[in-house]
Every structure is written in C-alpha cells, then in structure tokens.
Image (cartoon, rainbow over all chains, first blue to last red; front, side):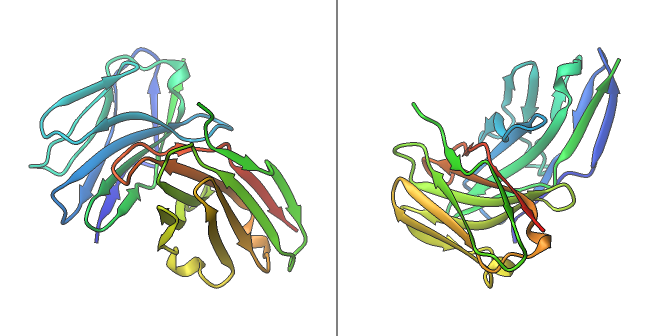
Length: 113
Length: 113
C-alpha cells in the first residue's frame, strides 16, 4: 500500500544553521501530489509546501523541497533555521485512483539559540 | 472565506458516555476528513468523505466511532461509548479534491475520565 516515512522523530538544530527533514514514500500510483504541513504548538496543521512535478523545486517561507521520483523522496530544507521554525512537520501524499491521503508520522523540529 | 470550524473546542466525558463532535468544512470543498491526533500515534485517519459518500471508515476505529455527513456543509463524529484511551485531539479537515491542500479546523480536545 501507500506509505510515507519520516525517519526522524526529533531534529534539533542551532539557530542560523541549515536544516533538512527527510521524507520518503512508497506508492503504486502515478498521479500523486506531495505536501509538507507544519503544526505550531496549540495550533492546527497548515500547508507549507505542495508539489506534484518531478525535479521541480518548490519554495515557501524560506523552506524548499524538490520531488525526486527516482529516489521516492520529498525532503524539506531550509538554509538558515529560525527559532520560530520550531514545530511539528508532516510529510503527506495523495493519490488519485485510490482516493488515499497518507501522512507520515511527523518530525518535531526544535531550533535552539 | 470562513475556514473549517469545529465545536466544541474542549470536551470532558466520563467513561461510557456518548459524545458528538461537529465540523463545518470550507464552503465548496468536496472532501472531508476526521483525524485523531496523539503524541504517540500522530495523525490517524478516522473517516474520509468524498461528496458526502463515505470512502474510508478508518478500519480499527469502526466499532465505537461513527462519522456522518448530514449535508455538504456539516459533519459529526460520534464516539460511543467513550473510553479513557480516546483522550486526544480530534481534527476535522476539508479539501476541494483528494489532490488538494487540506484545511484543518482548530480541533476538539477530548478528555475521557
């Protein structure tokens, strides 16, 4: 079946340094969309990035991700982490044909001074 | 445009009670999702409706959890009977289609004693 894997439960990074959150997936469907959602403390998840185009970089709020179908990955990166980036990040995919929307387990990002 | 609304925001129930959570999706959205969120399990899909038709009933949650979509602008999630392990945040989300961004409501925080 379809699945999304986020290998790190917690990522801790010092303010100003780069950060990378990993996301890999398995799916049998060709028409798929990928998302990164961010959830700040005591708030609901909200979309950060969306992509469905192979090898195209998508950017928003200083974060970027590139869908690589060859390696089944959609990693989230930022060149300089800010204290305000501390939150829970979910990677997700959706596929037509089976009407599935799959979330990863989530990665908590902690940015320290 | 109004976002997803959920009521109540907080609920305290005794073990064995029946509780009903309510959700109003974004106007014009065709897909509606109910999730349970805990720190240990992350986001767990409870139900998925597409144009008011139940597409996914969450497997393991079938026996005590029942979601209904009474019309295109209102959904309920009934938990009967409640158990302490049901204590969690219940999130409702809606999207235009399965491949679009999900917009989450603020959630209902449920505590079962």
